[in-house]
Length: 254
Length: 233
Picture 1 (cartoon, helix red, strand yellow):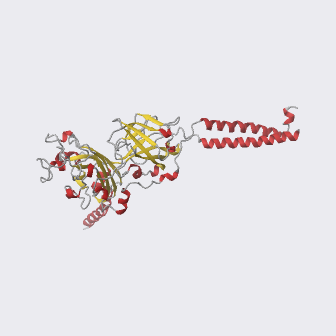
Picture 2 (tube, chains in turn purple, cyan):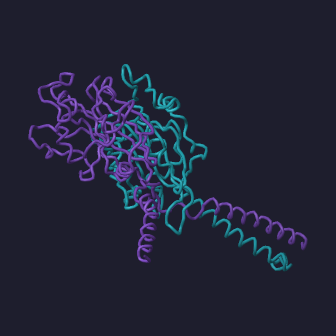
Picture 3 (cartoon, chains in turn red, blue):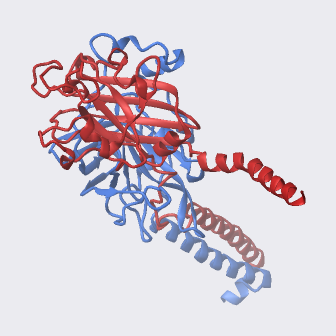
């Protein structure tokens, strides 16, 4: 009976501690992160851009700007993260089928699955990963995206601040005919051509530098020259005073 | 009439001696102050408050994210001048006499802090960020002084709004920036979001050096001077 009570007490105690432990582990550091978006290897898109993700608890604010994308066509854009991914953009060696391009399946080992869909409106969960009617269409090839207060899990927030999340903008016009087409279907959705979902530009999010920079050794800071000038000037004034006193004394004697 | 009769009075003698000492010490201090390098210039404090961004983005902020800006629906967003990514190789700021070749890559230390160039005569750029001329805030840092005298960014605090900054890049092009403001911030309260955050689709540049008082216990200055500029050509 006594033993049971003891066990119960310990169990209850541990249970009471759990939320605190959990909070400690799940607590993601807030912060500013940034990714420079560069052409995905093999896919030949001459575009580039910058993405900024600000993490505040379980909410993120996202801005993206890019140029050189296929104009007036939907560009699915996501934040990707997988615990077992490499947390980077694909390499040429990720082309598993050896077809000379990187498709969504090829990108998986590098950046993992979709964790946030960067839609302009509505749902932002992975379910909206191919909601082509809600992504930016890059008028004139230029993409400008801004969305605040996107809810994410603690794991995703933490992955972003720890530099493990990757921003990918999709949509590659391989045959340069100004639209998504071709016989090859998307790995994600066979109703779409692979051109619509192939990764175009990509960048790993990394935390902005913390604090300022130590850019000086103090060689011109000391001595404090203004202080020296003031002190020197003061002494010279005092000299004028004592000099006058001396002269007066001398005059009095004469 | 001998000197002893002229300055026979003791107080007169003492005063004369004090006068000589004061002249020597005072003059010496002034000579030292005038011949040793003076403290680096500091920007006026009122510039620490950022001026409102002059793009349409701020209006979109105020109205909330539910309504996308009208500019994106037709004709495309209006970006300022943007260049292809290319790493910086030289930096010139004519108004403060900066002309430096060979811009080193800067990374972060184990605490996530941006490392300064090891060479006091070189500027460095934050290589994980945007290159000068592409979207976002490119960051170039350099020392204000070495242990013996002025370094590359010695006069950064004297830089004025409207001044031109030219960055020569690896691809042979030159990115021309115009200074928006120069501010001084305590390193303890560094405005990370302002310096490294979103630039509303503009290509911008940050020039960073040290400022304020020098803390002999840490061997570092207590403040940073940051110049903000945007691409104009």
